[in-house]
Image (cartoon, rainbow, N blue to C red; front, side, top):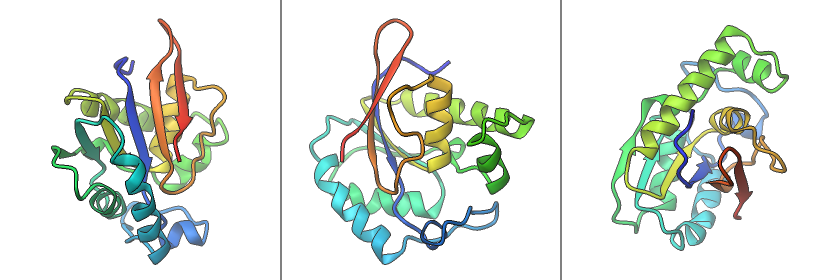
Length: 172
């Protein structure tokens, strides 16, 4: 179960893998493309208006670069959380086709652990991570009326909606 606290989520900027529509494998950790840098710069104006208190991020290079570009002027704690790392290609393919293999279920558990670790910090929290984490999060929260496969550098607001539901809205 995910802690019932509102938070913001930012998917990293474009990498060459995203541009070529390829999944990133375990040992690959690509940098942002020039477009990815532009995307991160573009979302900065939205982030500076948010009431965030902590920034949590994946340890992957693309998430760190996005966080550094999009939040340079925010004097907030920045916390790296290993369990916010992206899944591998086969997990993504199974997860997005509702094939709940043991690896997908394990990734769902990793996602819950990572999100809850982030939500232990003063909030609202901004989480900078990956498309797979976002998809798994939406699946676990049973998010309705929201795109689970978000674009690079899309900023999403998650909030508890009543006693059991969650709402998610793209802000940019």
